[in-house]
Image (cartoon, rainbow, N blue to C red; front, side, top):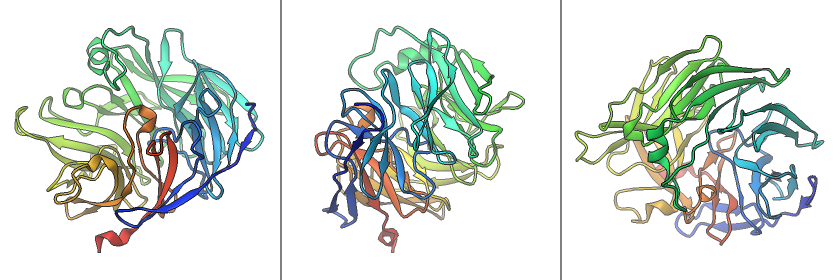
Length: 383
């Protein structure tokens, strides 16, 4: 289908069987529809539009989805789009995305396209990030590798890629004049680049790989190329990952420690300023951590895919949890059921907050195909 095609919504609202929370399926159950990665902006400032990806036409394309109606307007019509890496700049309402090695954008209103940069041959670009004012994009590109251990199982090639240490570079692209600048690089597998929402010069990136084997989280100052580790961890005994910026510019990461490699992990969510100050740890005690956490505007609550509560359901992978940060503890309550299979990357729920903290967006394939859902947040579960 050409870009600009309108696909009518088919919103379905249900009450969650376990909690009674209202859950709305936004996307029609046709093909697979999901939202890109949870660390990047995807929702308009007013909460009325969401950037999603769908293969409903036979190939992955990007769509502007109306939260009110579920209607989807096709934004792209080209091959080799990497949908999970995309983002929405809510300042200009442009979607930025990779089409093969090309970094491009498309306006949500006029569908006008633009091209900014091309990754060198033999490399591939990572998830995109953008400054809060929309002036610069940040991302990493890494060396392509022919791996011997990859199967149809997700992350099957992680250890091999990690041990081979692909060459990687962190890039900054100016949106206005399209100039590109390398701000860091090394023979490490770099990914998950995110930009501070309060300081355009502060960029976080990670050394990808098994969390207990890497010093994962790093900061680079774009203007000077200064680099330093953040949330320093001891190999085998500590781990940190799934880092996100809070709206105040702090980093939240899922942290774990253990007495020896033979012991179980004690898990927490850790908050810290990019300069290493004002660290606060909230422990999941008793219980274990969920999979991916995103924090609300006041840093008092998180939302996560997974709810592992002592005395709660044993199938904790099936639920979205609301996490309350209080008195050094990360307290989990079940918000609703997501019920996804976890079989493919795009089936991961990866819940994200709406701008006003009133509801969350997540993905699930519980109806056979991946669809985008909205759950109303009930803070009263902690009363």
